[in-house]
Image 1 (cartoon, rainbow, N blue to C red):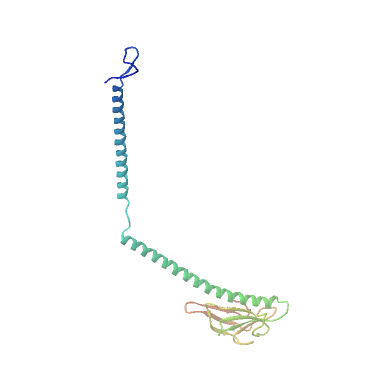
Image 2 (cartoon, one colour):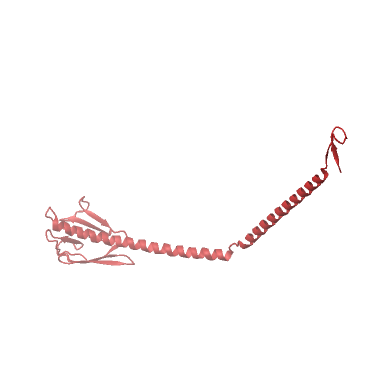
Length: 206
């Protein structure tokens, strides 16, 4: 098909274009290009779909049995840890009572040895309240200068002190020398543990 464009159909005054072939070739090229793009798009979509399906198949969940076993192991480990911590805490409290008692007795004897008031110092042991009171010369309840240690985890179990001076529940350290005529032992403890303090005639405590 030929198309003539011009004012007249003369030989010299017309421009003749044969564009039918060009249009046909261009249309064919465009159709082929669209077809290729469409096929490529479908290939990409199919590839992505296969990839997603493959990934979905590779992802696995947890069964009920696996969850129950995991929770059981977690609870078992937690209970063991809590039990060990509680035991450690109780042991620490018991040791604190023992250390407080030993420190009070040693400090009281040191005051008798190095005191500027030239006085005797002693320890009053109160089994009823599970407490030990450091005093100067003679024990008087409620004095401001008294130093009181109250046992929190342990009780006064037994007293075996020589009652040469003062009451049978007191340890009196002599001024300047630190010696005592109330040598012997006394024990503090509870259902699980006991600790015995030994005081010799020199006033040394161990």
